[in-house]
Image (cartoon, rainbow, N blue to C red; front, side, top):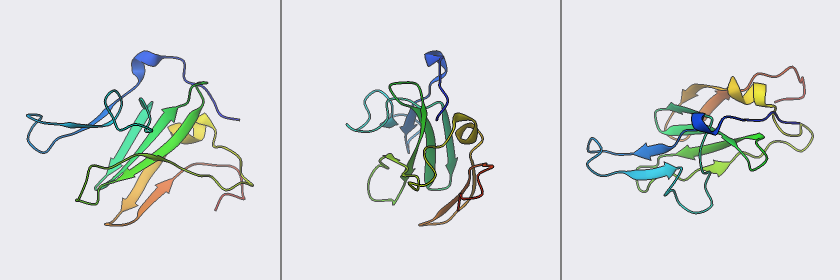
Length: 118
């Protein structure tokens, strides 16, 4: 039910540095920790939270999150949608917005015409 990404040239990687890139850690992309996404179509950040819209092997878009707790590099993990909603559509994820974040919470806007979406 998702859309597709066809232009690999537009994919993004996420790199973290606290010393103006004298040293860096890859969070998403080539050299990132095993099991994380390889690249993102869109990346949104707000304070300590990162949201990445990531194409899967078939080109469908998925949503991944990471949060910085100040102790170790953030690790991206896939969002899990409620079973009764199915997967998000590409159009929804491309319009995702981070509205607010605090130390342990983030509020995202994912547009939907589905009234079942919480």
